Image (cartoon, rainbow, N blue to C red; front, side, top):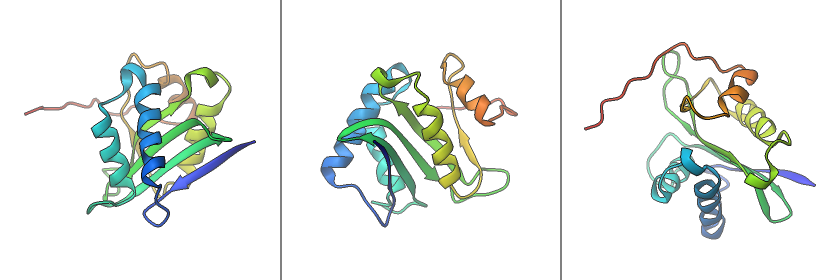
Length: 146
């Protein structure tokens, strides 16, 4: 039986759970991921372990196995900047192609209050899922790294 678990500022994961989520995302995001310290920081932002707008972390689990995870951070904005940014989403490599990513994405989007933005690399095959769910690409993002 697959269950959905949502961690929020009011329902924080234990340190052990947080470590497991970071490890899961680090491992299953593969080439589209970030260093563990950045993944951990996004989780801590979502559950307000420091001053932030918050957000949530959502897991799909079967028994003790994490099948999927997503981190959504609230931006504190609205209108021209969406209220939420989907920072990370991943499904377990051995369970891909079974609709878990779609389920996780749809559940997370419905749980989020307001619009949701995400960044996706053009080479990421998940872009097709995002388009099916209704995400569009009206802008070209440009960044200046200092």
